[in-house]
Length: 172
Image 1 (cartoon, rainbow, N blue to C red):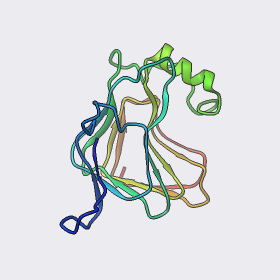
Image 2 (cartoon, rainbow, N blue to C red):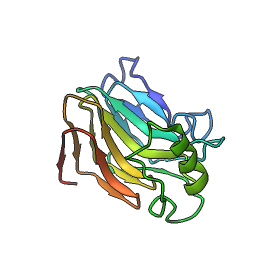
Image 3 (cartoon, rainbow, N blue to C red):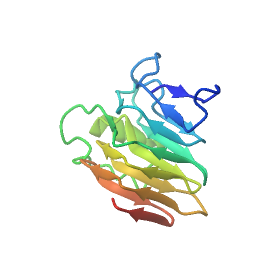
Image 4 (cartoon, rainbow, N blue to C red):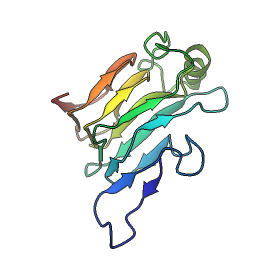
């Protein structure tokens, strides 16, 4: 996905996440942190990460004024075989991401490059998303403010939504 940081007068609105890879390869921007609101302009499919350890989040949104609007596009990752995320026996919530050993298991035993699809922190929001092929489609963590998920489907994940604090789910 490429990023238009809205540094021009012609497009002063919400930033857009564009083509996966952004010219640096198909997964060059997967795993990124975003502190502004964004709209997807196409599917974001994260390809396999090199190495033996899974990443935490394909997309992380942080802050109370931060929202990702997927505009009905998909956030997903390439899996080694169908059902790899759903059938993964490594628990992503009890131990992951605190224990790096489990990130190794997540990659080696399950074939997942990212444990979580969209991570929301600090009151961030997600809407109009389709998230699949992760241990958890959406992970809400470490925030005094509740995050919000609206009009979003999470399927073909081991868990749909994981949260360790308050959150609001509507039309999802």
